[in-house]
Length: 289
Length: 289
DNA sequence: GCTCGTTACGAGCTGCGTAAGAATT
DNA sequence: AATTCTTACGCAGCTCGTAACGAGC
View: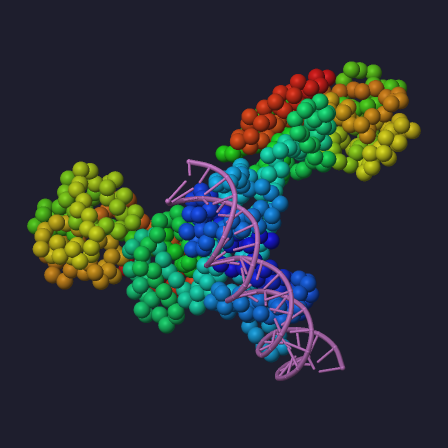
């Protein structure tokens, strides 16, 4: 059985190209690396290096071994973190999402639940959701699509519905709902991290300008002292950073189909029983408007 | 970084259930395993075991860790063998197949080639072909189907064509070719290891009996001293074990479409240049009949 | 009384750093 | 002269086995 430290040295060498730099990178001395690579060749019974008095390079086999070792070391590292993640998941149920809105609702219900619930501070791309669950980094992922694999399942929770907050004197405010088309050409204040909603508004509203704000505090400041319209959803009300106490705007739901996003809860089938009460709570507190 | 010997102990324990049996299986003493599992828990910073004075069992985390460790150790082991296989493949070009016929032809051309060619003695199931190539256990796999992946490609070589060898006085022998339907209800001597041909004849010939022979010597003996029909192909002529010097049977090709099998050579795209002359030789020596 | 798990102690292995040397640029 | 790789030597750390002990069936 090959010792991991030898594989690490091989991987490091394949990147640095010399034993000296490898040693430096691994915080050991050159003789250590020399002996290590000799031992690795000996253990494998294979020539990995071409040696000249002053220069050492990988053979084709050596390059291949380094490639395999890189992957193996990554998995080796993943072992520890996954075990720790699993252990942690035994005690606290971690919720994350691929959109910020559902995360806010989750944070809300976490406060009213006695169970050990943890809600992540940020959301992840949808294509990482499966990985988050299988590696036990999250027990519950709130997604805009169903995830179906042999070990995963998804349940529908509700819809996140987009609305726009318009100055009350704008003519578009003279109706109970608006359409994307009616917002054409306007300038909006938008928070940077709104997930898929960003693609939606950019795609659906023609010739609009979006004034993206990285800091929630800046967003709140500018909304308060300007008349720019901004977006909100039935879930964003739970955001403590964006709540604007004195707002002389009116909230107008957008009635396009693209302004509604179904939200699913995805989890490991093995965790079905554990997440059940959480799903019930999420559905119970889902705002209807 | 977790030491492999600790993971091995964990894997062994998950199978045996006690430290004593684990120690016995690994040829070490009980205290070694005790300390090992303590160190593993310490290194991971996670409780893997429930301990009672006289009994130790895995926690849920422990079971999960053992599961992950099992997979990791398998990959760890695969590392050495794959590096050695790659190194070996640098020097000798190994040919294998998913059918015995092409293997015989390959063995034939290997004798007439100066290059370092090795031909395996047995063939493998088609679903292992991709694995054999990517792990460098074989450089060339002769298959009855094309294999298409980002790293693999296949080239058509020729057809293996089934024929039946009938006693010259049988009425079916009074024609240049026969059909599967005409062989209905007969009894055939068949070698055990004929790959996919077995499914073909069982499916295509109604109510036939197949007298499967494990030993080629028995097959030869019985064919010589009996009148049972047996099968051959345009490639099986290269089989030294089956050649029957005094055969009072006549060879009749089967003209059904199912009696012809296209044969492809599959290999890593990276090996394209290396296999090129071998493919040329295989096509050049492919028998036409 | 037998089996199982844990702890203590000493021995042996092995991987490391230091030091020195040889070859190349 | 500076850099790179290799070899030799002694030490430190770690894993192992032996021995002894405690707890349960």
